[in-house]
Image (cartoon, rainbow, N blue to C red; front, side, top):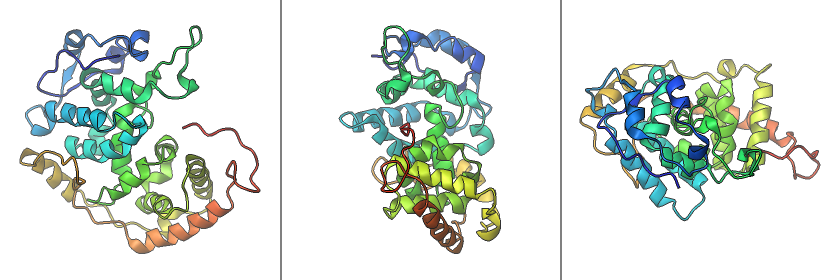
Length: 305
């Protein structure tokens, strides 16, 4: 099985899409090869904030190792809800920084290719290649869009589902794979009351399975074409100061906690009235949405988990 890199420099770095692609071999995707770490690190670029503590590699690597150890006897998908908020708190990125795919390429190949293989190799037949039929990790788990790449999807899930400093909703959202697979692809998820309302339906047990979450997401997305959520359920105006202060505080922040949840930027929480309004609306939409296996629902194609 793919092992941790045999060379880990002290700082995180950036790895371009072009350079990343040459290291994503079939052997790596099958978990049978390691990444040539020394060669890969020669192809990287330094972070623009290399002198800051949030560029340190060791705390991130330790966090990822803890996730693999903690969930070693569980399904790897269970690690998502634990790792997502902690990775977000450890990296302390702005959205602009997180939109740079190069940092996620480096995390997947230069820091933790063993995690990518551990987390995604055992996925269903969708990752089986033609020929010998052996399972392989999808290419996009190493280098891909934010809703698919192993570490980018966790960071963005934490960013979009957190409620100000509260990562509790992130844990709930990441416990259902469709909130990652489908939810992160939806433009409306950037509207905080929408994101929080969808999470509330899961937290209250109204939406339980991945099939139900997929149906909820489809209904919410379709309704957004005629129902302008940010008008009828407004959010507070975003203030960038708490995020800047949170990032600056990284220099003196303690290690990310392993038991309790970390605390995010002290931004104002989502207005309860807006969330409550959308919870009621989404519950009605979901009640009429087709869900495979639910009495009266049409048989749809199997939902990909």
